[in-house]
Image (cartoon, rainbow, N blue to C red; front, side, top):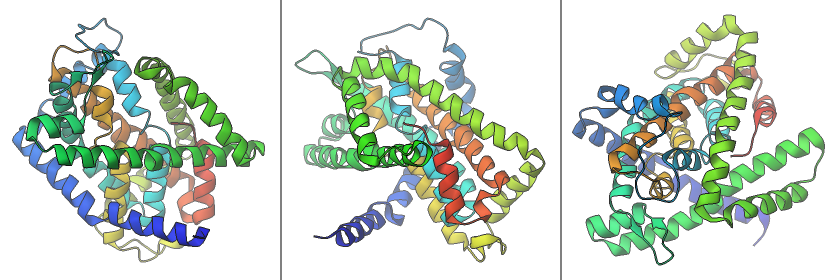
Length: 349
């Protein structure tokens, strides 16, 4: 099988997996959970903000688990803050226009409750394995909560395969591309270096992963926000126009600007929802696995960290990236300028 055939096969699978059925089901789940919880993301914002960000420097009451609540949060966020934000936001704008950002915010809004529910279930149904480590996630609450072991097995297999794609290939490819463009380091060299560095971390188990994540992720997020903020400040006068394009583009045809003349509303919705899910991973089942190992005395307390994770990821970091892209003018200059922008701010996640 040649390269072209493999590429086309992967694209065909991607169109199915990331197509309308997936993000429609996730959107419906988010709306349903929001309704059943009394619109938790709004009504309880003060509570989950205060229990997470508000107490981040305080000694928290811990329970059984292998890593601290903050380490669980940063371990899960490591898969989203970084390339997830950068690639997700820029490609949403590239293919869906500025209006796609609005739909990223919308799927993120409902994703707050979805991720909260995922993590609550993961902690509630977690168990200790034969090595004495706490394990949990969708495979556990599907098996123990619903009694559908067959579906738990399917999730485990599918999740393992997905880890190679959205969990590794995207990040490694962007890091290798950035190193090649900025420092002329060949992609194979970057790949081997990443393999060694990541191996040193993951071979230490969940505890070492948590220790590295709690230091690396906040630094990574701060650097990304700072870089985007510098771009935004240089073009501060264009910020109102950027927000106008986001809101107008979400509900109307895009104006004749660059390569986006006539971009349909459907494209904005499609790429906004699709990239929003890719950015925060709410509903995909990856974050609950990390959060299930947290030292906590109540499932809801750890669920708060999942809720704030989506807020920080989609509504803060992605917004900074979007404003940097729109105010810099990179989005009007075609795909080459957008790719250059992504590489300029790319960082390992």
